[in-house]
Amino acid sequence: MLEPSPLPPLRLTAPALTARLDGPITLSTLARLVASGAAVSKADLVQAAGLARTTVSTGVDELLDRGVLRLAGTRRTPGRGRPADRLALSPRGGHVLVADLGAHGAHLCVVDLSQRVRAHAHLDIEISDGPEVALAAIEAHLGTLRAGVAGDDPVRAVVIGVPGPVDGQLGTPVRPPIMSGWHGYPVSARLRRTFGCPTLLENDVNLRALGEARALPADQAPLLFVKVGTGIGGGLITDAGQLHHGADGAAGDIGHVRVRGGPDVRCVCGNVGCIEALASASAVARRLGEELGGEPTIADVRALVARGDPVVLRLVREAAELIGEVVATLVHFYNPARVTIGGSVAAASDELLAGIRSVVYQRALPLATRNLVLANSVLGEFAGIAGATVLGIERVLSPEGIGVLTAGA
Image: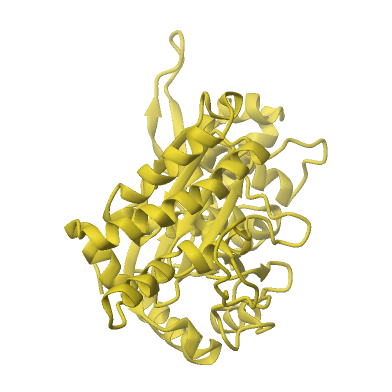
């Protein structure tokens, strides 16, 4: 078990104000305005929510009584008025359990509603072992982590990310190429039964994209996150800081874009010439084995990149050129403010980033790149945890979730 890993402050969205502010909607609005930092006192809430003072005061008092909010000192007020109580989310409001799965491991976390990581561990698993084996291990380790956290605060939500396409409404993976046996498996329903709370299933790169966007200033969105690992995936964040899923949840699945003029290497999806089959970390490992012999792993590639091995650096640069062509096309199509490159190879060296950046700025037109930031992930391996934390807390503070909180469940 690892020591708890702190996250940077993550921006939570303030709710869209509505005329229908009653009951849970009112309480959710007040809690999320405080959580987002848009309001930190009753006076701020009156102005931000456009509600009567009595409505705000009654709602805040209920949120304080139920342990959703807490008093966090005072702040000066203009003139000679008495200092105003400063409001903040209470860490005693409950926990969000997070599982960020990759092909060969998972990051697990217990996070409270004030965004504090209470416990964190890395679990070695093989996603190819199937859902029964993998989820049993995750459930057991999350239970152990939770038991090690002081107090008996309830679990309010579980968020799990997996390396493949998902149907977020049904809570099931959808024909994930590298997740044998997971298609249609009721992941959300299983974890909901185990932990007795709402469960959100999301694509792992989407979680990384959301975490990255919410750790950066708001002007860094729209954002495109590109993860180069066992496969290649993408996540899209709108200018409002929200995930863009598309009509069926398939937005950002860039790993199976065919590379024009590329070799006809067969991809795990069944097609040939996909960027994932040609330029992922596993593709680099395969090509390294073809040139030098043996069966090098992605971990071997990462270590050789970090050591500056000339053969693997050449292969990484060739992969970067191919990825850069795809990213340049996406920059024209989506016009993001920032493109973030993540994954173990990117973390080991700047070679991948430099190669992608070179192609993008050469191929894309000036209007799409004049203000573009193209950089490595600022959160690294914790980006997925950050995105899951955001999703979980915003779900707990939604009108549906706040009703459970204020009922004392």
